[in-house]
Length: 201
Image 1 (spheres, rainbow, N blue to C red):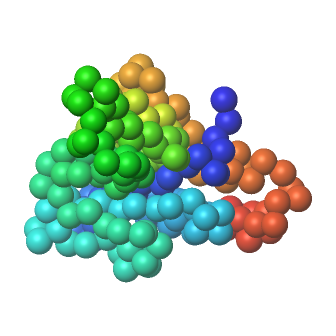
Image 2 (image 1 turned 45 degrees about the horizontal axis):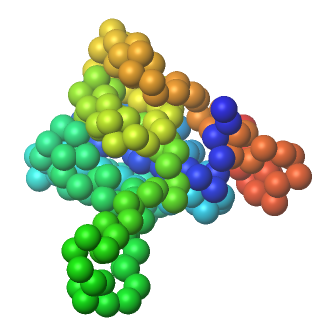
């Protein structure tokens, strides 16, 4: 199964000013997150950000925030608990006609909100806390979760790698920034091939 740009959304979790200096290989992790956001913009993939307790940990870098449609301030470690899943699903379609005039046994239940872009490409910090809990809850919401390993970080490699093991066991796909880029593109003839390729080189 390959990633499809038309079915993808990008979620960038907690690349915050006061957190990143403590993250193992933090500059590389943040650089890959920026590349992902720039590739998503070039390919019209919606991008969302989150910030854990921003009053204490500061905001995400302005260049990353600028590439996100919205940034969710959260207090739960899982962004799903603070409403992220509602952003990732399209609004429910209103029912046509005057349903209330029908007897209850003839009324159809409201249509379930199906995600138009069910592939959630996610990366962030800390991998074993906020990223892990958000990704696991997105899997519980029956969304496809693709974790971009080289854009994720923790203060220690051991915690980061333990998160990847657990996520893979739960059904998440583990990918890299370049894998995402070339699967979103699919062909060297894609109109965005050169700008996306330039981001990787």
